[in-house]
Structure formats: structure tokens, C-alpha cells
Image 1 (cartoon, helix red, strand yellow):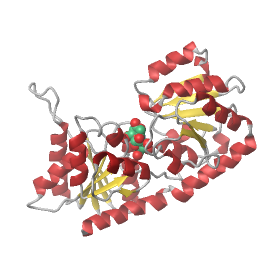
Image 2 (image 1 turned 180 degrees about the vertical axis):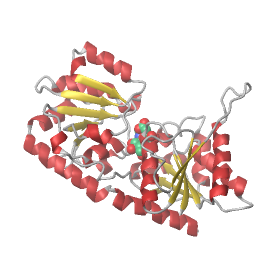
Image 3 (image 1 turned 135 degrees about the vertical axis):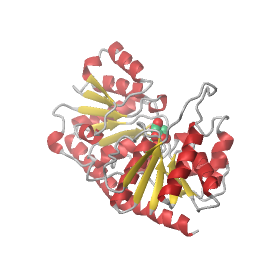
Length: 367
Ligand code: GMT
């Protein structure tokens, strides 16, 4: 198949899933065309069957807000026409599915161009429910030829919030278990916690700092903070106030996160909301035990006490107690690390998830 993929190319779970999906599909023989405003991180455009088409948004003094959605629609239509795409697959509803709808309508007299929208979480739970975007998000779901959600929780939330009648297929996030694999020889000799996110308020990065402060009352542990975003300054400041700044490494945005994850024993994901929790899955594939919260789609991934831990949002003492236990009880850690890896391999590997997307594309094309 010839597939156009659009996503937010910057750091964020939806862009990562879209990019990894494109790479996996290309390795299975499909022709993939990324249509975005920048080369997606984690995308090496020199891979066979991968193409990248940049959306240029020219500015004009009249525009206070350059109309990216229109430039994107126009580029989607041009690329689909030139390369005879079979379908478009857009990640994140706003504005990508509206641009895809426009592109489809622009080409209607010449070629059929169905589009699939994958909902990732904040496009529904934060952006979609905002009154400014509610109606257009609802419309974008209703107009999509196919809709997928990355967890059952997000599917239910979408149906409940928008009252949409069209089928939403659940296709969970996936991980490449060869790239993300355990490497015990790379594991830190000192107890190491890791957090990986875009440092948005929903991730509760300050909780990570507070958890480390609690853990350090009994264990000489360190924390690796990977990523960047609005809460980074506050997290660094809190670490200073709590006297643990020198025990935390803030390393900013990184490309090969698997190399960092492998060094850690435990991943902290104390999020307020998480429709799936891709970072936790990446950690599990590396044999790093995740500690998360009972929110959104996280319980579809982590089974408490078996392959990770789940606590209530903001319960620092409970989250810290779980981390301390894992860092001090090596047989418990080893058992859960093995179970975490098994969950990633058995239920969320590319081998089992990518064919679900392929079958869904075929279904949509056959309709
Ligand atoms: O978590 C974010 O802020 C980024 C966001 C995105 O859309 O890029 O992540 C969402 O999509 C990921 C990939 O499907 C999911 O694993 C995350 O759980 C989801 N984030 C939230 O629901 C907050």
C-alpha cells in the first residue's frame, strides 16, 4: 500500500507512534509518505520506501496565525495525487483529520482518498473538550473513514464525550522489542530511577522530584530526567529546595532513549492522565519496572504487582514506598522486570500490533 502519514513531528508520544508505525510498515514493503512541517524525530529519511514531504507555511502580514491546516491539506492533496496514495493516516485529531478531509474533497473528482484518524489522548481529553475545538473534533471523528484509539479507555472516553456513532477500533501502542531490549551490563551500579516525558503539567514531573526525596531517606538513589517542557524549571527549582539537585540529571530531549532507559531500575510515570503511557511500555520492553498511576489506559498496560506498580495520582508516599521496595529487594525487582519484558513481548510488540493496522487499512480500502 501507499500510505500518507501525518503527525506532530516534535517530541511526544503520538509523533513517536506515527513515526515507528511508518518505519515498521516500510520494512514490510509498504511505501510511506510522511507529510509534516518538520522531519519527525526518530525518522531517518534515508530508509528505503520512506519519503518525507515538508509542509511549508508561508507567512503574510495579514496573518496573525498562519493557516497551517490549509497548507497541510494542500500538501496532502498534492502528494496523494503525485504518488497515487491509497490512503492517509493522521495521528492526533486536531487539525490533522480536518486537513485530511479537505484533501480528500479536493481530489474527489480524480481519485478516492480515504483517511484514518488515530486518537492519542490529549486530542480528546484536553484539546478536544476545549469549547473552541469541541465541535470540530466531533466533526473530524464523524467524517473519518476509519478511527482508531490507542486504548479501550480512550475509546470509551471519546464515545462518552462526543457521542459519536462510528466504530472506533482499539489498536494499542506498540514497541519494537529488538530496539528496546534489556542490557543488564549497561544497568547503573547505583540505584537509578528514570522519568521520560514532555514535562507538561499532566505528567506531574514535580512528583518525580518529591518521590526521589522520599526514596533517598533510605536508598542512595539517583534520578534521570529525560525530556523538556514547561515544568522543567520548576522541577529543577524544587530539587534545589529539597537539597537533592545533585542527585538528579536533567538531560533534556534525547533521540535514543532506549540507551538511557536500560541504565535504570525503575521508571516513574506519576501522570495525572495517560491514555496509554508509551514511556512505560518502552521501559517494560527494556526490563525496567514501571511505577504509574491508576489513570486512563495505564491499567490496560500495567498489571499492579505483576509487571509494574500502580498507585493513586499524587500519592507521593505510596509511589515512593513502591520505588524503595523495588530498589532494595533484588529478587522482587528481577521477577517484575522479567514479567514487564514478557508483557511487552507477548502483548505489545510490533509483530502483533502492526498487522492490526495493516488489516484495518485493507478493511477501509475494501469498503
Ligand atoms: O503525553 C503527551 O503529552 C503526549 C501525547 C501525544 O499525543 O503526543 O501522548 C499521548 O499519546 C501517546 C501515544 O499514543 C500515549 O502513550 C500517551 O499516553 C498520550 N498522553 C496522554 O494521554 C496524556
